[in-house]
Length: 139
Image (cartoon, rainbow, N blue to C red; front, top):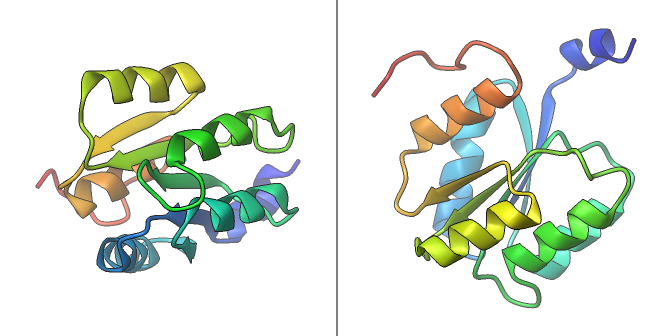
């Protein structure tokens, strides 16, 4: 029943990254597709968004952020009943296996190591929503 109104509304994406240029690149790429983006620059702001009641369809989290790490935000999101099933993709310059393992154990949906292709990230977001790519191509 919720699927019809949701299909008409843009998908809402929370992007939390303390590197302004990376956050803006992600935001601009997602907004080229059918996405509405909220961009925050630290873990505390991400937690405030997640604790709120505004709909969030997917979360993109950097690991290394001020006030709360992306892994701390991920763990808290999985404790929130209204965010427990929200897809969360970890974005990080820390590509160690231990970080990937910990993120997945905490309930991350996917893990991208920086630098990553914004086009591939958009394709993964599209895939999570079960839709065709916003911008075709395998590049």
